[in-house]
Picture 1: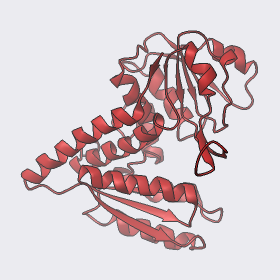
Picture 2: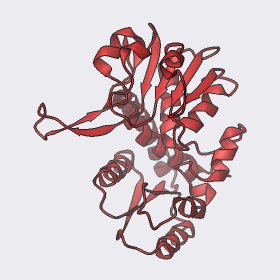
Picture 3: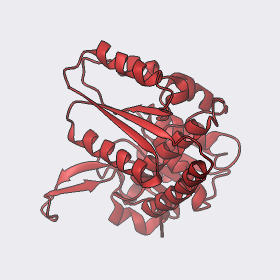
Length: 293
């Protein structure tokens, strides 16, 4: 069993990005600039945004953090997005999800300029990704793809089973793994809450991606010998084993599944760090106008 060390690979990619930023600085270019908008005081969102801001600093990016009250009117948030859209110094923008229930995520996502949508959620970016045109790929699927590439995991002709059909992970992963070329050329099955015989389908997977947000859902009986298992889930649960009283768990029962795998991601330290570094990679592309010119 080989551990897919997302933390280590993310560190390598950060060094590569930081080197690019140094080259930009030496040539007198503009530093990449990411703006993050957070609405309310959700603990998990605060943590994620803090990680993203810190990662920007590590690679030499400029970053702007915009905080809005949880009760902020939808129109005020949209006006703030317009302000960032029209700021030529800002290359990429993210609005941290989830949003309060009185704000439409769809309206917010579509209000972000396509060329600044480094989260890859805008329908235009999603559509371009699906038909194989240059696009910003949403950070978690992009991170998984980079992890597969860095470990030279074979994908051609493999059966990839994805548990979860979200617009952020499940559906983009299905498109990426089934596209022509590497990593891709898989036969893909998407499973969800209405899937029948889920265990049997999972046992046929050469590559199993668990992205449903249910701690410990995937057990050893659902995984065949030699499978590649990628655990996207992360759930904060109470634990008497840690000083903080909390523990992060993935969708996979790591201890019992790992011995059967050829490769597996840990939680934490697997997909999470790759998601953040992929956001940086998209921001660098936005700064260089690599996608939309």
